[in-house]
Length: 78
Image 1: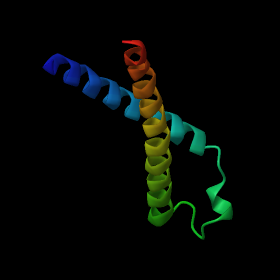
Image 2: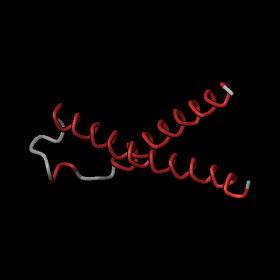
Image 3: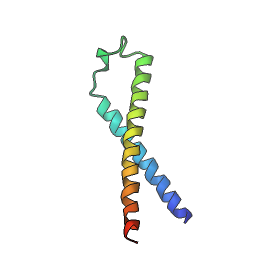
Image 4: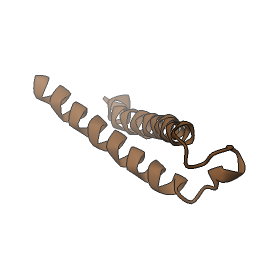
């Protein structure tokens, strides 16, 4: 039973890292210089990092919830 928790933890880590990288990659094309005073400053960099983490968290939670729900469907007919 405990090996299932280990597999689930690995899946969560991989999915979170994947969506973090995908979000970071996608946000590189966004023009933050239109919204911040100093786009190369440390505050702007921190803002980009925080936005990346927030979006990646939302997307990965959606994906993991969907995965978990779809895996639970097999118990519907048992």
